[in-house]
Amino acid sequence: MHMTHQEILDYTQRQSELFHKKDDTALPLYDKYNVKRGLRDKNGNGVVAGLTHISEINAFKTVDGVKTPCNGELYYRGIDVKRLIQGFLQDNRPGFEETAYLLLFGVLPNAHDLDEFRQILNDSRVLPVNFTRDVIMKAPPEDIMSSLTKSVLTLAYYDKNLNDLSLPNVLRQCLKLIALFPMLAVYGYNAYDHYGKGESLFIHNPDKKLSTAENILRMLRPDKQYSPLEAKVLDTALILHMEHGGGNNSAFTARVVTSSGSDTYSVMAAALCSLKGPKHGGANIRVVQMMRDIKRHVRDTDDEEELEAYLSKILDKQAFDKSGLIYGMGHAVYSLSDPRADVFREFVEQLAHEKGRGKDYRLYFSVERLAKKLIAEKRHIYKGVSANVDFYSGFVYSMLNIPEELFTPIFAMARVVGWSAHRMEELVNMDKIIRPAYVAIGERQEYVPLSERK
Image (cartoon, rainbow, N blue to C red):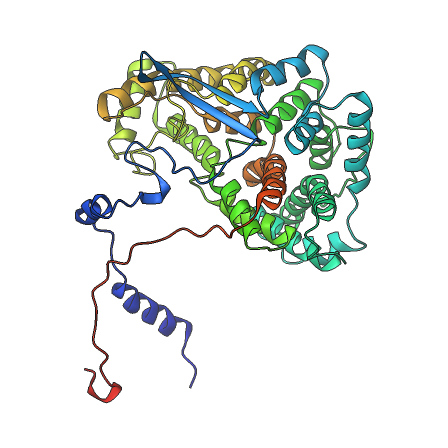
């Protein structure tokens, strides 16, 4: 006799009680055995697990022998990301492809190298015959990250050199996926928008004459139209999300799976699953939802006293999702400022003016300022707190008319470059599988024969 669905649910509910519940009284055991919880020490610093040339984060400086918080700095291959973006803006040209070249190969390309690299990416934006129909459009999920992961794993079946770990072959696979991620994600959304939400279905092919950011907007919009400012802002967003210090969860996942000798498609699928988590790539959606909640409950968002009172309720777990978090504020590494948020902030006012969303801009600006003060008053934080990249990125995406279902996939379209760089670096240096250790603290038990068990 088969168990019913409800009987299975009853069983899992009953058996789940056998799992050990989180016990804060056990925290001293981490000190006793000198174990770093989540690979972090008491101050939140990550355990050093390797060396990298790819990127670097600075949030502190040593002043007179004392570790002192400073404005955050992010470097790609030794170049300040702010200076990198400034160069693209001064020349009024897109920078995604050039930054991808820098992260992968360690140097800025000359004009010939850049043209050749762009050509490679453009020529790689071709899916197998009927792939869109047979894979992307079959049972499209609301979760576009799941759709993207499914598509990446399915692409492995079309690769005749799937398990060849030679550097030229892995680089070919990485470049192919960097080129295809925008198509896989946008087409996945278009399929869900049609079959799940009843909207008109359209599939636009990418244009080889356009940049990655321009093609994303072109493929996403029914009329294929976008403004120069929109393309510039999205291009900048992609650059800012491309890589972050190597120690982030998804890049570490890419390196761990690479170290096992697995193939490129499995590595990227694993990294996607990591990024999908709301503690990693989905935070900007929570910021947008929080702001929507604030506008519903604060009668006048320009009234700072009323706004501050509601933010206090959020921090006190009395409002919004009762988590006690003001999303988009604070970062595991940065203290005084997140350089990515600084860059976003420069675009927000300009874009808000173009889109007629000045009141929303004032709300974000006020929440950022008030949240710093309230968090400092209500929380005991050893370092400063500031807006992180997620605070403004969701607002920017909403002004670009990018649906929330694509917020994290947009992140993935950029971060696949960082994952690729880390995969290549891990392959070059790989000599041991990455294998952390856990200290066993369970009690010994005697074996009891089945007939004697109660």
